[in-house]
Image (cartoon, rainbow, N blue to C red; front, side, top):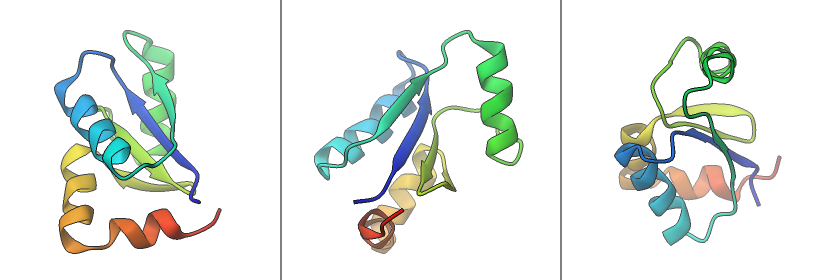
Length: 87
């Protein structure tokens, strides 16, 4: 199974939606709740090519983007392939 990491704020509706998609698919993920932690947000932005919005999702170290990006991958049928890949 893929190594999935997601950076979130706990009360963010987009974060909740992204995690719900992963949960529905039965995907185990590591969540980094960075609420109000500017240093963590800066580190996330460096890792995600400058994106500071949450959520930001990584699959096997590859940045796949935010909530809309994750749902677009699902709609296009590409998410399962990424999730099935081994790290």
